[in-house]
Length: 536
Picture 1 (cartoon, rainbow, N blue to C red):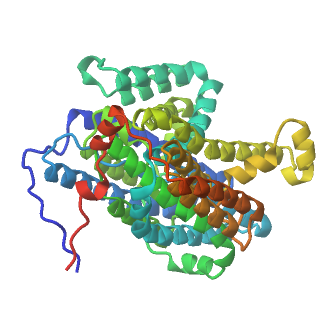
Picture 2: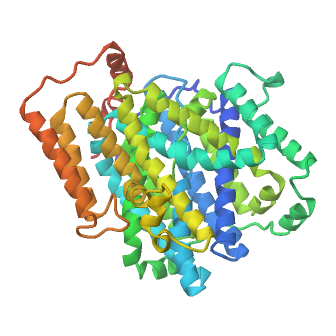
Picture 3: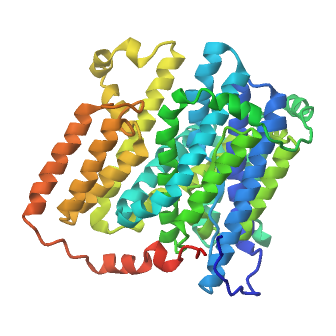
């Protein structure tokens, strides 16, 4: 039986503070954008019937989101009571952005194109999300060990890589496509969230920015009133129910799904580790196992109810903390998005709110996370942060190349590596480097950090781990297989051997400077700050 630790609750800890309004409007818009995006992907790419999307998938996602956000509100208040603080910020939570695109384009779309059966594609997506949840639950017991030994530069660097590429670049492109709508919104966000300037009447800056951008877009003729009228006809109330039949049909053909589900499940709990480290860098040290168990459970619940989109802790805790958010904004976000899902309002919102007025909040989060990777790691480890960034940039670039070639009706294989290389596009290398990017970033960042510190034995251990992961295909390979990428595995072994030889000389490790000692004191290891729940 699990026994939760006793908490001396602070009766003066408010459920809502002024900063929660800002953080709620910001995170709410963030999650709103993502749900609008996954709705469009389901209907426009996989060609699922709108009734299934609005009547089953979104309500299922709504249940997972409200449960997760309420849970993270509880964790924040528990941590605040334990440490007798009033400035603890809850972890942000929503549908995982990378997984939205992966499950649609790598799992569901190929099956739809092969069978022309959107329901079969949906079943495969549910099975894939369920496997992701199982792997993340396993990671809840493995992840804390990895976090204990991985350098902060590697963890925060991989997170910054995701933030700069997959979170920031597409919003930035959408912004500059209609810069006259997006840049005023972006300016308001920067002024309101990065300075101490306040609007008259303390109007939430995120809400004000969205209203300004929406007004500019409607006056400028970007939006269409008939689209709003058509979307209003799709409004209908729906509550989720279990869909074990759909999930079971998908799990019956589980084999092909493992090739992407296992690496992405590992990605999920590795990203979760990075996000917990990011929160710790901002001053809130959460229990990693509690976070990962919630993420895994959210994916399982959503899949059983009909959603193929695993939820996860979001990048961005430092941004919402800087905006003044505490515990209430998380619960409010979950409840608000769930209600929108239950009432089928996302089609209407997509017709009312212009995308260029919404996406600047994602670029703001990208700025915060990218900066944090350098601000909260030792300055001498800056090269390790950059090393951790590079695999995610490679993954983003390779995906962009694939999308461009696909739009032209061809593929990289059809064009040929030599032709691409002659054009200055080294696709094969980018593709290899980008497979399993977050794990690759963690390994490379750790190796560079340990070499800088002259801890060559640990560098050799991480290089050996890179060799093993390459050999079985968890990194640097498109699928899991025995001897998936032998040449890359051999390269890591040579790297491990060189570091091992230097370790034999027993050099004195580099002594940390005063700034590093201050950072180490600020970021006490997680178990010492918040112990695991006791069991009896």
